[in-house]
Image 1 (cartoon, rainbow, N blue to C red):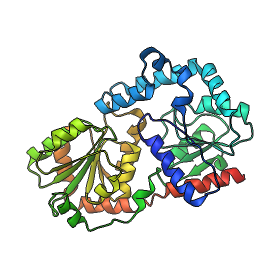
Image 2 (cartoon, one colour):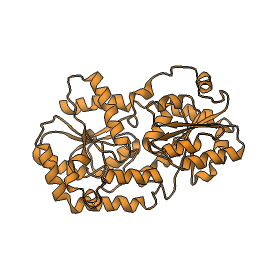
Image 3 (spheres, rainbow, N blue to C red):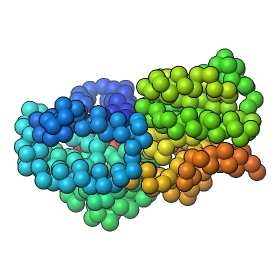
Image 4 (cartoon, rainbow, N blue to C red):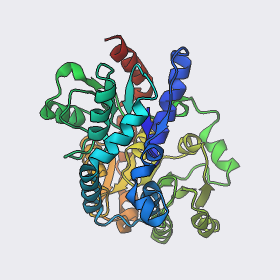
Length: 368
């Protein structure tokens, strides 16, 4: 299973699948491979700066410097195309060191060079791309015109694969995005008591604010705007590795600031709604826990995440804003006229079981 650490969702999906495979298929030997480590000899950014390109990307996400992200994406794809011969040579050398029954790609952008290099070494071994986005961002993002398998988590991704020319037996439809198995565990305690234990009001509507593992200063602005609005709400802010953000929020009223933790599902259980960026992982985690989402979609939104806002509105699962400066109005809208209950009911009907379905799909691919 090939992943990288640009963002956190690719590694998270790989480790979630690994946990389920270990339980259901204990005789399988699964190797997680970080593509960044394989391609370090041809990483020009690393050679010029001494920093890995994935670290640069994560720094951009942490600081919210995502204007022009489409240009950056197309620049990356152009670089992959220009250096494809060198990249494929390095990959071929890696593929020769193993004889797998299946190669699983959990990453975008590199499926063309990975597939071609893999086919030259292992012409009969199935190659599958598992999309960890709700939809493709063509061209050359998730789906390539090549004879491979693809796992799609939405009807839109399936339609895109069909348009790309994938035969029906090469497309596998999962029921959503890959989530860690912990999001399927029943809650361990009563919600009100859990809030009181953390110093929160057991009766106030509670929002969970999350902007990935590196946090975002946008969370601070959201908390301040909600406080000025005099809405009777409280928030739990997941600050991730952003310790400065946690310290700034520590003494804010009606706010619980939480550092990096693997207990996100527990905090979601204590919440009523989600506020954050339109990442496929965070949205899917919130919806799995029955939380409607309030997200922002504008020119700063990463191009591969813009469809997520459309999907959220189409499925009646939350509210999409042009700017979080309107967060107070959005929360008020969500809490009025029974919308919160309607959105929560819609979220509970999704029944996303992708992390349990996909290992069975792998088994089918290898049998075929």
